[in-house]
Length: 96
Image 1: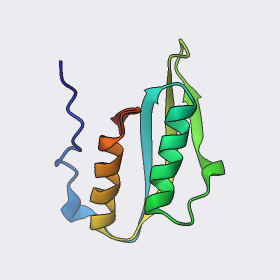
Image 2: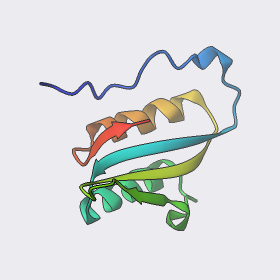
Image 3: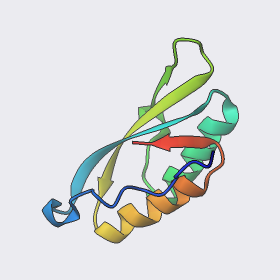
């Protein structure tokens, strides 16, 4: 079965007001690869992102980690560019 890794277009973008703070949660297999990939992607899109603010939560079994970040978006194009990079990352299984 193929995962649909494209962001939902039901985001009701017409209601968004920029700049805006937006929490994002990423889920992937536990490990340094996931953590490193997430930090690299977030720093690419947010130069001043503080990696110390990431919240990492292991799953009950420890097989997966969810990583939560609070982001400040300035424009819609920034949202789309970030989601495209997150979707392309093989270490990230789900983006919420």
